[in-house]
Image (cartoon, rainbow, N blue to C red):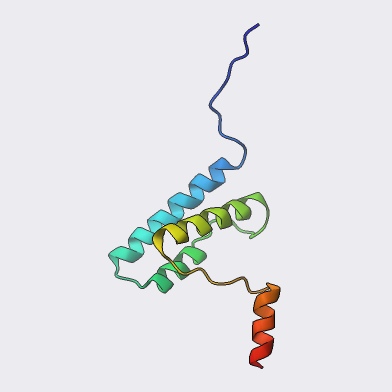
Length: 93
């Protein structure tokens, strides 16, 4: 019996594709409106389409965002909860 191979995407790939499309649309709209990279970065952050920022969808969003921002030279805000950021803020006090 011959095994048939399908080209179905792995689970979660759909979230990455949706994320990229949203980011690209937001990026192009921001460029059209002559927004700064910081403004575009904020717009993309606010364009997150799902209700909760957790789980597989959110992880895919973050993966795509990291790559998208690097590719387009957009600034990515540092994680608010990282130990390094907390230490930096503590030194500033």
